Image 1 (tube, rainbow, N blue to C red):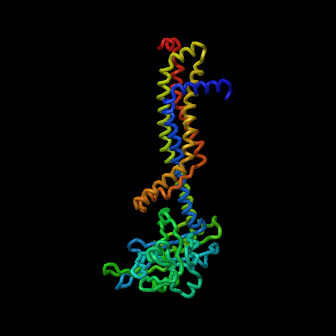
Image 2 (image 1 turned 60 degrees about the vertical axis):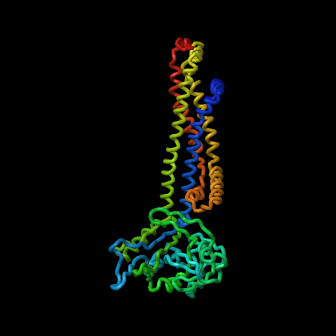
Length: 451
């Protein structure tokens, strides 16, 4: 395949292309940018998919998340006569059943959360106040910046203590250390015992799990929360003089399963168990991170196919450019073709000559495109650095563009390199066949008459 004749044909192709360096270079650009686009697009898709999968994994592939859901109108359960009390969601009975009837479950983590005003002196913050247990720290991959997280004795003693998220601490205590100082929630004082480290907000995943910003949270012992804030399982709201209350015991119960292979089956058991205790009320939802992980993987392939197809269009455009130039070359070299035919060259020799030139164009362009594609990651880092400097100078750190680039981490897929290069060579061959056949079909006598 790569004998003396083939090598001689390739050398001749290089010499012919070097006679018109600028034209050959411009023709090659279509292939270069086509290959680069394919690799870069797939790298962006792969990076976005990796981020989504990491966020799902943070939820725990062996976890089952059961959440309270506000039921549709008409399915809210009983209300008192004088006040509107909406009763729904997970109950203590649900927690007891899930703990005692599922042997494959090795851990149960209930939480209750509300949005409330948190104060320190004149500093105020509307925060998500979470009643939880000590396991919440590890379950949500949080880390402590100062102090300590909630401990078992805080639950046993129903202690009035609190842990602040990073931004909550900065807003409530902008100039002093919050440890040992008090905050007030609903008129009740709590002593700050710890501050969590800053954590990037999680994106919304699927249709059953919303995004979460942990940095403005305030964490209380679950039993303290139930006694001080969720009194008698009621959380009262007074807005513009109107009174309403919600009766929810737990907003979420996270179950940890021993074996990942049992997660989906256990989730079905949990669903059937809760249906029996909740009847017709549609006031709970089950999220299985393992299923979300599978969905994220399927979306990754769909995303890659779509982006790769869009980028492949530029390769087709590059191939059309090659065909256009090679047709012009056939016209310019008509007399040369006639001389070669007169000296005994066969039609397949002419076809091989012109096809070798298109392969050289597409192959060299493909190699350059591969090199540029491998630089996608460093290029994004450079763009992000310039953008960060611009944002700092402009004082617009909350820029949407800045957030997008800050979260992008392109990951070049190894399999995309031979794929893109193979497409580039195939494009050269496909779009080079017609000009090569046109050259081979020329009549030698007419070709020799061409001036």
